[in-house]
Every structure is written in C-alpha cells, then in structure tokens.
Length: 224
Ligand code: SF4
Ligand code: SF4
Ligand code: SF4
Image (cartoon, rainbow, N blue to C red):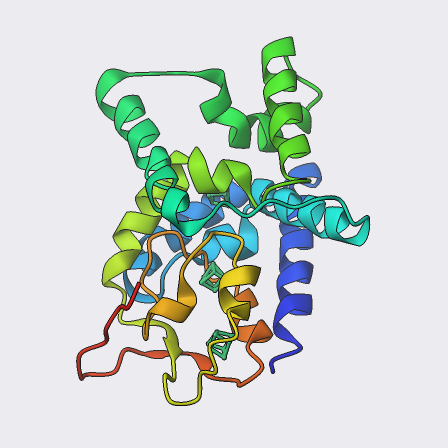
C-alpha cells in the first residue's frame, strides 16, 4: 500500500489552493502545461492541481468524518449520467450555451477569491459545494467541460493503472473509493475518460494489485 501518495497529493492540492491567493502559481497556466501530457499519462491536473476539484475532495472528506450520508449512484444509472458532461461540452462548443452552473470552476478560482461573486455565481457555487458533502465531485463528474475534453483525450494513454487480475480478490474497494465512479475492478487497464489519476484506488487496494504502469502489450480486457 502506498501510504505516501495521498499525503503528497493533499500537499500539492493545498499549494495550488494557496496559489489562488498568492498569484505565484495560478492553476490555469499549469492546466496549459499539462494539456498534452494527458495523451501519455492521463489527467493529472484534475486529481492533483485543480482547486475546485480539491475543494470538492475536501468537503467529501469532511462529510465522511461527520458521518453525513453519502450517495454513490448505481453503475446502471451512472454509466448514462456520466455522459452529461460531454453533452454540456457539446452545447458550449457548438451551440454557444452559457449556463451559469457550467462556470462554477471559474467562479471558484476567480470570482470567489477576488470577492467578486454575483448572486447567481454565489448560489451556483453554494449548490455545488453543498452537493459535495453528499456526492463525490458533483461538478467534475457531471458538468465540467475541461474534465470532459481532457478525459476524452486521455483514453489513448499508454501509461495508466494496471490491475493484476490474478491477485485481485474482487473486494470492490477500488470501485467504492473512486471519486469519479470509474469501474476499476472491471478492467485490467484503466483508460476510462473519468479517471483523474487521484490514485485512491491504488492506495485502497488490499492486494496491492493496482499499479501505475505501461499498458501490457497483450490485449487488456474490460469486463464491465
Ligand atoms: S473536472 Fe473540472 S473542476 Fe473537476 S478537477 Fe477537473 S478541471 Fe477541475
Ligand atoms: S481493491 Fe484491489 S483486490 Fe479489491 S477489487 Fe479492486 S483491484 Fe481487486
Ligand atoms: S480510477 Fe483510481 S485513479 Fe482513477 S479516478 Fe478512480 S480512484 Fe482515482
């Protein structure tokens, strides 16, 4: 079990959260630097850098500590619901749609920090932050256009999380801890567009059978 990964991720997320206040390391240029790396290694920006992703993670952590009820949408609905962010991305790109709730990430990292919230952006942010107490990363899972675009680009990556099917005991822990509802247990090589490389599944696996590696040359199969 890799105990150092999540503390390191927390420190990096915290640095970029602080960077919103100290304009030394604003996340947007970092998003630009990491943009093409998703083709090779998947989406690290969302799991390690994005402050709006981080705040949703932290609220989820707080909710668990407070024993608030948490909801995980069953896979049979989730597989359709997770298409929503591509629909929003398509509407933004091709129909010029500009619903306030689709801009929550910018409201958080720009308007909130600079005390520049309108009542619409304030309500939008409040809804997503409260929803994060009950649902993992609600904005990332269902609304974020950047997450959708990066996720789609990442599906060809040759480096990602490999599951050793011989060592797996099908305890479902990897599926349960995944904040992006990726069916990790059902695949031998994670190239799901929702994966944000948070490594929670890797850290949770009791058999240590999930590793970040190059894809095996023989065919990797999906069973879900
Ligand atoms: S999906 Fe969007 S809001 Fe979520 S971490 Fe990625 S860029 Fe940030
Ligand atoms: S956590 Fe590990 S052992 Fe459990 S189902 Fe996932 S890959 Fe298999
Ligand atoms: S599959 Fe693993 S690394 Fe990817 S988002 Fe889920 S928990 Fe994080």
